[in-house]
Length: 67
Image (cartoon, rainbow, N blue to C red; front, top):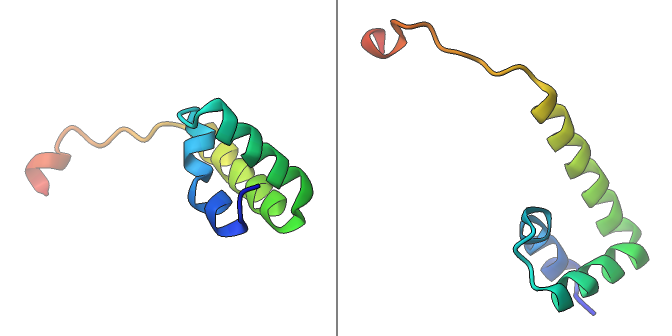
């Protein structure tokens, strides 16, 4: 079983799908049994969903020259 600190430290690996399957299963088991880490996961996923829903910002064509 992963500890809370390891679970949080490896959260991005899990979301990015680069965690090996055995560790991913341990990660899911920890999230299922730890309300604190589960809340962190929900909050982070909600934030990512909000960010990805925002429109793409295109800089003004003169941005680089004025920078």
